Length: 369
Ligand SMILES: NC(=O)C1=CN([C@@H]2O[C@H](COP(=O)(O)OP(=O)(O)OC[C@H]3O[C@@H](n4cnc5c(N)ncnc54)[C@H](O)[C@@H]3O)[C@@H](O)[C@H]2O)C=CC1
Ligand SMILES: CC(C)CCC[C@@H](C)[C@H]1CC[C@H]2[C@@H]3[C@H](O)CC4=CC(=O)CC[C@]4(C)[C@H]3CC[C@]12C
Image 1 (tube, rainbow, N blue to C red):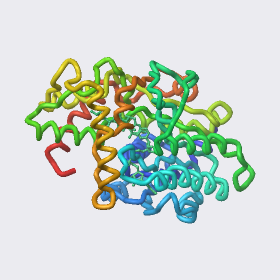
Image 2: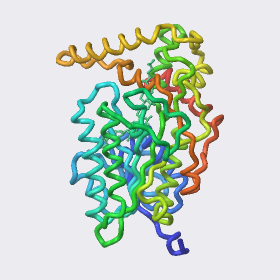
Image 3: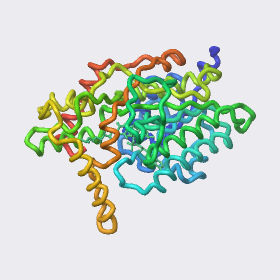
């Protein structure tokens, strides 16, 4: 990167820029990307908070659009140097149909790739997911695994199926010639369960605990470890990956990276208690209060009720066979690939991530955010 390149101002596009992760990516780019000249935020639902960003030194362009509409994506991508494609339908609860999940996550990603090729955008960072790997339908643990760990990835649920297909499209697109003759450089980042400011499920657990008089009841054994990563660090990893793709194209192109930081390995519920505990909630039981087979039965019952009630009302409980399987299967990563390939170090320590999340839960739990 010569001086002239450093002086060059770049146009970034963030799809899904108004979502939980997307908002953090947008804010992180504005704070930490010195070469940012224009930031395009593309989302189906634009957040009101974007307005305040428009008064800053970087041009922020809000684009209301749908990734399933190829022409809208192409118009947004045209002239962008880098695309961070984080838009997705995150649904493991049966809200959307499998066809819609596929349409948004797979066809939407195809549209982004084709738009890059047609308009000459060379760098694409895709937000994938740990779910591309597992947990698989057989409940095999993935314990402190890395990007090279052999694991039988068997999916049936529409969400992981769609993320796996989309990730493959992104990786296979690496090296394709874009308009103007240069090669497309792509990589995929795979967060584990993201937490932090804006995490709606955490807020829902908090509100539920408040409704139950400050108690939550253990459902999953404490021995089941679940990988979690702070949203600020996931955002930082996206910013760094996007920045370094140009300089390290040969190394990073076509690669996948798990997102990781210093967050401790714990069960899903014990991890949540790191935030909900200081907010006044208590987790009852050193062991699950209900036998596992009862949870399996309840999860199956919920799935049946969802199906039966669908013509009348959308019933979307947290517990279903898929969420139970994910929550009760160990899935943790231990890797330094992002550090080796593009110099990633977590920006936020565990203590920092924890404090920020606690403050957000306290504020969000008591307001209508
Ligand atoms: N939340 C998590 O724990 C994890 C999320 N991910 C991935 O991270 C990405 C972001 O997830 P979150 O921020 O959690 O979800 P989110 O639902 O908060 O954000 C997704 C954003 O995409 C937008 N979007 C959805 N459909 C769209 C469409 N058709 N056209 C344009 N925009 C559309 C939504 O409006 C939303 O703003 C997703 O790709 C997801 O698969 C990966 C691993 C873990
Ligand atoms: C007491 C119940 C059994 C607890 C249910 C908790 C579940 C709702 C969540 C447990 C694990 C979560 C998933 C995990 O963090 C991995 C994910 C990655 C993604 O890409 C999207 C979100 C999710 C599937 C996440 C969804 C909620 C859980 C299933």
